[in-house]
Amino acid sequence: MMESHGDETNRSSFMAEKSAKIFVAGHRGLVGSAVVRKLQNLGFTNLVLRSHDELDLTRQADVESFFASQKLQFVILSAAKVGGIHANNTYPADFISINLQIQTNVIDASYRYGVQKLLFLGSSCIYPKFAPQPITEDSLLTGPLEPTNEWYAVAKIAGIKMCQAYRLQYKWDAISAMPTNLYGPNDNFHPENSHVLPALIRRFHQAKISDAKEVIVWGTGSPLREFLHVDDLADAVVFLMEKYSGLSHINVGSGKEVTIKELAELVKEVVGFNGQLVWDSSKPDGTPRKLMDSSKLAEMGWEPKISLKDGLADTYKWYLKNVKH
Image (cartoon, rainbow, N blue to C red):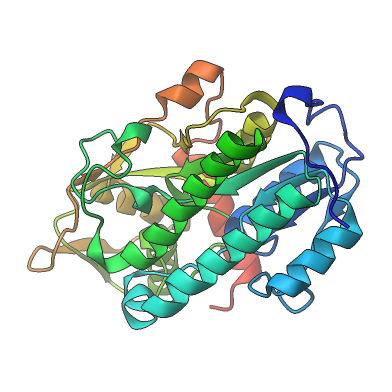
């Protein structure tokens, strides 16, 4: 039997209910694990966590019975099929179908089984390839996507629109947050398919332990990028669960740009590699600039707390302890 759903006009405070049942979907990933750490540090005592083996979120019947039995109050949806350019190109069907299934099952079951509030996490790749910089929330659907990850992006856009549709039709409190490039503990340091920051940490570390004379990095180092430590994102997630109940998705960024060259120099320093950093300018640079406009969130009173240097040091410490190298 379906429960009556939570109405956004009759909400109780997220932070006031430390014993509330909260389902963090995707709790083993980069984002989900940070959200769990944050909630535990704040004293939340009733987190509901399920590994993929225990609950396959792509299976609608399993999700239905889970929600029916758990009587959850809040849901943070960070579970997703993620990967780099190579993975997106190789498995486009997986990226669109798995993400659509997870989102549809979790968002719909959350509404129908009485969840009070849901936060859906997306990615900055939802925006058009040539969106004006810094990218504001209203750039969504104003132009074509980056072709290399459009399968994932289309699924995430559908998730945003699903949250908006359930809010409009059912007056249900579903919100979405779109983080910038993230890094931190539990990141993917795989040699082939990791993102730029963990890839640099791994390469400088390997160069350091093998006494290499130089590390060669593709491009000129001139592109500008924005990075946010995942613990800052987790802090923003809690802030939004407590303070925000609007229709628009919200950008979550650091607002600070760094060139790839500055980033590489910083990683080199944090890792303690004493050799040369060599730029191979015959290789492509990629997009010259990618910065999100997070002023909506800033106006609400949230700002990031972890500097890039401190965040890199923290991430390198985690890497040394947890990654085979």
